[in-house]
Image (cartoon, rainbow over all chains, first blue to last red; front, side, top):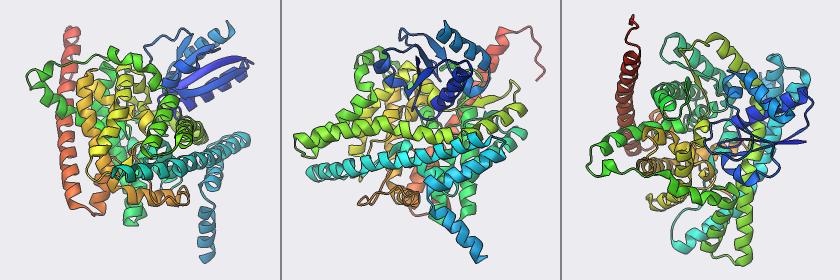
Length: 92
Length: 462
């Protein structure tokens, strides 16, 4: 079971879009995941056992965990590249 | 005819938690989703409404009596709870304007794109609720559904222009190329930062003050919403004169409200996904040229470190301002964890300078609270219509979107109840918008001349 943090400003709108996309991606590739959808300000307190952090905005801080920017799930540009990046973290 | 009306009435009386799942199920099927997916979307939106009802109940039933006791103890009048956008958005989606607002906002966008009045292709369907809120409030104030829809269209058109005007800031400061923020919260306040920036640039000494954000990073733990909610609850409990048990209970309850709110509201968003995905792909197919900006949620700005620092700073500042706004009845609460929405674009306009952001933000919060107080009556009706008013709670308010000057000005123009309020808020706000327009022209000219000097061998055809 891989644990993924999906975060945005309010943990409602953009992170739901990204979380749904990631859930479907993992299902398709048979990767069991647990998705933690939270506000960006809650990342710091939820890092334990996390395999990947995805945020829908750019973060400049390094949390010491693999990170992928999830903005392409919103804009629709470069989605495939982002999916590849996520898969390579989860499968690697 | 009577039978049809009775059927419609019965359907509406089912309440948002039952009616919207049926509507979304039908809409999702019509948009070509499978039965399974359509069913899941429908039920998901219902779950969101049941959930937000529970959390709002937890908040109002416990925080409201404490706020009343606190107000009585100190002779202040902050006894109406700010339910925040996590409270306002669901009651807007439950209103009779909301589902019509989505196609209206998209049509306005397409018309403006076709007429070259905007470059923003808005694919941020969730935040159409801001425009719908304006429409729903106008509908309640005037009793006219048509005027409500006109309100949605006007607010949407204005938001797209805001997206255009601040796209250079989005690109230059936040580094989001090709993206605009036609957003109801960050959007409306952004023009206020422009004249303030201009004035501050012309005051000796003050214009040189630049506060760096590193000082704020050590307060990281307070920025965690659960800790912040707990502290807020405990402080209000103490001020309310509760005993130790009451104080600690309120602390944990408010931490729970802050954490559970997005956890339940996100199901509403998940239910809207089939609609928003469809709208997104249709808009992208027709307007994918690079001369367009993609309109996205300004949640994208909240990751910037200076915005994070400013958001922390504005939790206490907003409560302080609430205490000094004359006649203020609203206790800021629901919007505090995402207070950054109000100030994010100011951080960009002020180039990350927290001193200037503090000034702009204070003006913004003062104006927001002033307006939100006048919106209490209309917002309470909206809440009652959505079935979210709890027993014993007579009134609710919100900073986002009840405190928006755009909603306020449009409502007052269509149904005037406070001429002075309209003239003051309208006057200040329109002045800021005009300044923004002039400033935007300059920004575009600067960007163009920069691009021209970079590639002066290219012959420009314009």
